[in-house]
Length: 284
Image (cartoon, rainbow, N blue to C red; front, side, top):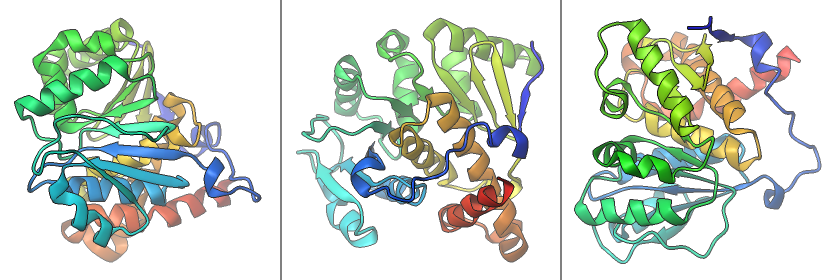
């Protein structure tokens, strides 16, 4: 395996683009987050708020009806589209034209949801980030991998990765399998862990930010929102993944002196995205 490229301050400046001072919401991208099921609407709340805080001009969500009041109340800046089902997503249809879509947070794996995901993947041509239950549904039916557009970003944690590429006995075997998988399906893998690695065919990037405080519920949903936001702002998929992972880890490094490891939660990632961006401005 080739030596990884470390995502450090020097590398990140190759990918980060300064915002245009004359920009407006119409050209800052429109992202759509698809997910949620009864009891898991919080995942979409976390993801969509992080999407906004990462600079996206407009963010919509597509959720089951049971999440409508929750989203409208919790995050008034986000626009809400609902499925015709109350508790699950059963038919993914929308009239908007987002520049990027994040799918999976809190989605659940109901049979109707699985069918809805496959129908969506057959038609979708929009840049995509796939996470959580959307990955678990795909791993149950590997043929659906052929439906993914080139340079789709997937963000599995170790168990989700294992379901996709199979078990491994060593770190070397895991990396070898992941590289083969990335090449076979032309997808970018964000391998969440300590450290998080990004695999784009033969090229492997290794993140240098973050700490153990990120090992808490919901931080993956936040990362999905952040990468989706950057994709919608017309970053190349690999750059969106690199910048998203770096900023995500940086928020934990910034917050640690105040929260400690134990008290840090996923909302603290979102709360510190602004400070993480400001630290990039100082590098330039």
